[in-house]
Image 1: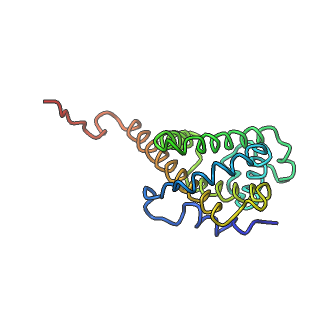
Image 2 (image 1 turned 180 degrees about the vertical axis):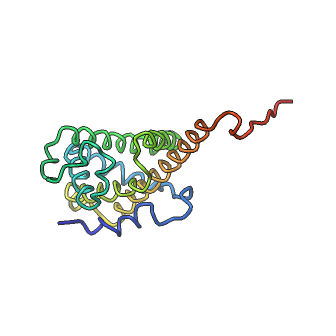
Length: 198
């Protein structure tokens, strides 16, 4: 059982291959239109996609369950398909994807949204190494829904979006990590803030 995209290939394709995370390309205008058009079909099945995405995530990357204390000890992944908490989390992730698609014409708003999500994931103890897996499992989950509408170009468009968002989330996570480390320092150990006022 599996998708050609999942597993180790997905890790390389969905954001883990670059050394400079800040250089992820924004989706092009053509890619934005493809994503929006395909989302119109996907959104009718968002609850289903969310569940499929996370069950597949736990199948292909069982270590991800460690981030989700509610599912950490669940061995029977089929039971997760009917789990209310997993459904709720899947819907939250799909809602974020929906908001991301809606903000594709206002990339500064999308960037702010993704940075904030990365910061909140710091507090959930969800490290960036897992973020790229979600995009890979999302594309596997939506391929059967989109059927003949799924093309190599559409796949590349979604990959670009997920790489872009994932890198912004990683940046937000790192910013929050740095901020929390600085807050933990005693006042005398904190870097000096210089007064630049004249």
